[in-house]
Length: 392
Ligand SMILES: [Zn+2]
Image (cartoon, rainbow, N blue to C red; front, side, top):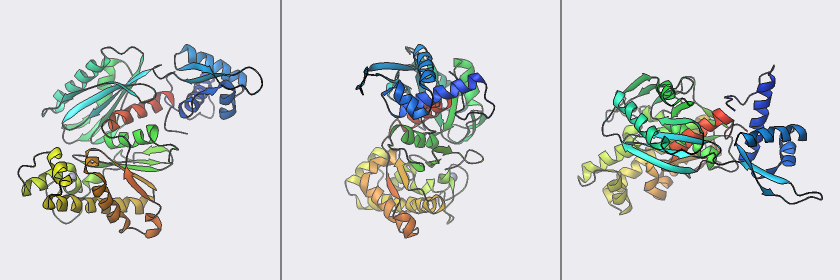
């Protein structure tokens, strides 16, 4: 099965209909396993005969498996089915700023193996080579067929063509990363913005029931958001939705990597916090030192961190006012700052937007931290290739 669409065209061919129906079954099993053939017929509206036929070919294809028998409702006890976790494997990559990391992931979003390589200042073609080295290392002992490779990268990414339109720290502009990786490994490759990938990971693997709308804000060295609207990733007209880390707060401020001044990223990112904390205590040189000083209650550091939390809270208030989304999650290295930081973001956001909107909005830490981008890139690939995960 290699369909890339979950919408059935009006005049579908026999093969399109079959693929669509297979995706219906896979999705039902992915969302709620194990199920019997009778359950599947009831849930999808397909006939028992069609279900049996489609299930047979999905089992032959290794995508689903039988897992014992369920409770009988009178007659013979029914055989239960589920998605075969390792019927296909995926490779997910997170092209982070200090290192490129990746993992081999199964169809349940479980990480089977991971690897990472330090970036060490590489950019341009050298950074592309590092992507190849990482995939080579991960592919080395994959036992099941590879469904494809999902890549989460910083910057503005055209997911339709796999083109990195702009990624400042990797010095990539209009780089056709997807096709480059595809031509080397001969499997489907999907490239997405890292914050978008983080949002997909939360939606796909960690939210039950899945919310219709969700904003996941990732705060690390940069600040960016992934926005889910009506169960789908909203990428914007130019794939830049959620790039609010590079919106200038408009009152001067430090120069930003993007070339302007006073962007949210220069005030609220972990990089900005480390820089500001270093100015008051030169012993603080990295995120670990910053987090330790914050938790130790160093007054000057607490003041810096909480002021930054308030700035982020204001930006969150704008998101609430514009989108009225009830679920807002914060993920990334910033989670190490814990509840005090989160409470300040929450306070600032809630006090800056209509109470009617604020009181129904939950602002929380997300569930996945370290592997959020790797899992999200895998989730997007799974959706594209098997119709699993996002659409309901
Ligand atoms: Zn900027």
